[in-house]
Length: 303
Image (tube, rainbow, N blue to C red; front, side):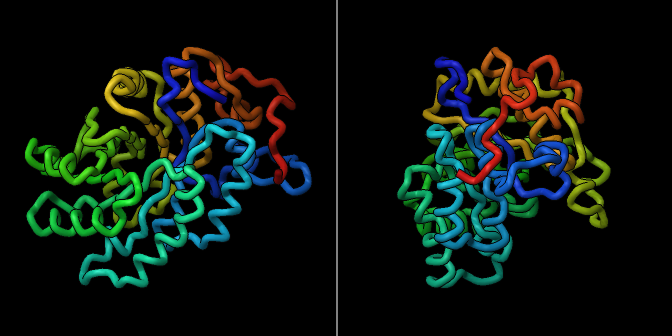
């Protein structure tokens, strides 16, 4: 599961793991009794991004369960999206009880040393004005015990003084691949703290900017290896600048995130990597990098 020594700072994974359309593609059709998707995924990758925490804070019991399910991979780390109450619902300040709900949910992961980063994802409308900087500083103050990484999508944040602000606040910068518009952030390779973070949303431009498009449509995109290669070179270079690197694929539709994450992992490792037989069957492009044979992936039951 580990990358070679030269790249041990890098952890590659997917944004989320609970998708119905992954059944029979990422996850096998025939499963042992007590099959647990997260346990299975932790044999393939060494990180995963918790997406459900964006919609509501996790319960401490859920977080404890997640820790148990990945326990067979000691290298495994979680990252987690911050609750949207702190990023998208900004009409009024949050309450102490709302803040405590988040902290209680993250507590088991944080205390176990398994919370690699908290992703503070803002919408495109969150540009780099003074009011938004104040909001961002308040978020930092509320969750200063966590390693925070900020995902912004408006190009105004690329101004040098704004990046300096992130660095002074101790906030990491999330490099994203997304469909481009006039004022969106394009390809970057930046770190404003000890953690570098990369997220791949896909390039389905038509659906991305269509308000009527569903979630699956927006993230229905499979990167070609030629599209991933410039990013892989940047990620390799970044390992000399930071303590830890997270690479997360969010183009989740029909397991495409897992495909591209495996391609990036193999490219960064310089070797073949374990891959589910069902995923290789659905996406033959993985045949050139897949190391597994039928039955080799066996962590498909609750530990």
